[in-house]
Image (cartoon, rainbow, N blue to C red; front, side, top):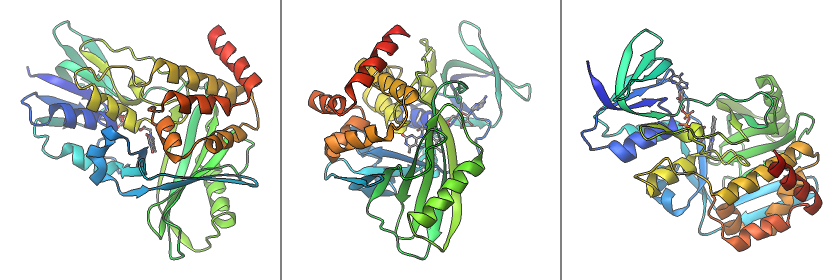
Length: 361
Ligand SMILES: Cc1cc2nc3c(=O)[nH]c(=O)nc-3n(C[C@H](O)[C@H](O)[C@H](O)COP(=O)(O)OP(=O)(O)OC[C@H]3O[C@@H](n4cnc5c(N)ncnc54)[C@H](O)[C@@H]3O)c2cc1C
């Protein structure tokens, strides 16, 4: 009976990162189990180029030094020299992580059960196979809770012969229908002829794909003024806007979204799990977000849940910060004066109410 040193349950972005950055070049035997290992998934992972992300600089498909926010009659533009917005595609990430990982075997099956046999774990797969491993990294997608607020989105990657301004990203454009919750468009121009256009909603109820698709097509026509284009790829997702409790123990470690990497107010997770691996190499199980940041995020999400017309809050926040401050805030490395600016940009009474209700709950 073979007992692996390490098993990865789920072999997506965070497991690939952990395998590569912790175990490449070692003699540790690894097995990765993922029900969709060979999927064609190729979503974009965006992040601001903080210090710990600089090692992955060469993988970034593109960098933007400018990003925008739009509300009816309001446009805010941020620029930076130091913290550009970058993106890496999933398949590039996968190829990078797998390169040189000779000690990794793969099983493409659903994990059905895990039993702790004290000295090692028994992992049962859907085909009845049993795998044994001394240590587990579990990144299987956490189950989303129906009644809680989520960030859900659908994006089309479009290609057009008409010229696109490839130099600046639209982080949030609120000039779209707001009936289903806080809704905005996110536009990532990959080059002068290709752009990812994503419809994102903050609410508890996830819509049918057709709803987001209709919003995107309308937006492309009315706001981007593109008439001739073709859809070349798509991505979609739903991310928790609430705390995922990390139930790790010494040899059973939850990583990625399941390990609480997602910043609940924004959905960014990629750079946060990498930060843990890069900066806390021996203890990648360390909390991804500071206690204060988590509390601020909870107050913020609570405010979004209980109020309407909340898009103005994002605009006020963007208005109160410059590009570097905004990027550092989004990546969880803002200094106290920047955090204070964010707090001061929020509607005071409603935020105090929201803060009080997070204490009560
Ligand atoms: C479309 C999309 C775009 C995103 N864009 C960004 C972004 O721009 N920036 C950012 O910071 N974050 C982004 N995120 C959020 C986050 O970074 C990603 O979700 C990231 O993939 C999380 O990594 P992970 O390893 O936790 O999960 P995943 O990469 O989703 O990996 C989990 C793996 O577990 C497998 N699995 C699940 N259940 C089982 C089972 N029972 N048995 C076997 N295998 C199983 C799945 O097939 C999957 O491969 C995005 C998320 C999505 C979905």
